[in-house]
Length: 124
Image (cartoon, rainbow, N blue to C red; front, side, top):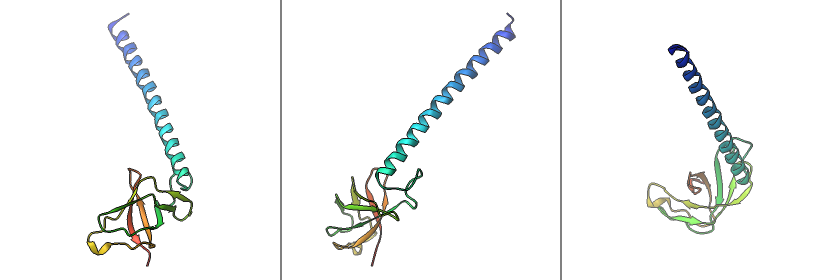
């Protein structure tokens, strides 16, 4: 076997190995996507891509002062209104102390990556 033939065989082997690795990564990405879709369904979100607008709503059971958080609030998906219990906290990260929110107020929430929620609006 010539030098050129052995180099071609070596290159073919490397390409086949890379192709197998690419298929493995593709399979892993599909598995992660399926887990995310299943978690979204548990939260009452829409089809496979997450809640239709990514927002949530809650009626606070206690006052939520600026810079504070509440645990175990009832949270609804928007617009589907499927009720879930917030696994994490609801944070009030308003810019000033005048952003305190009274008990009983309905708030609009955005989900955080750690499973908590942040108030992004208050219904009047």
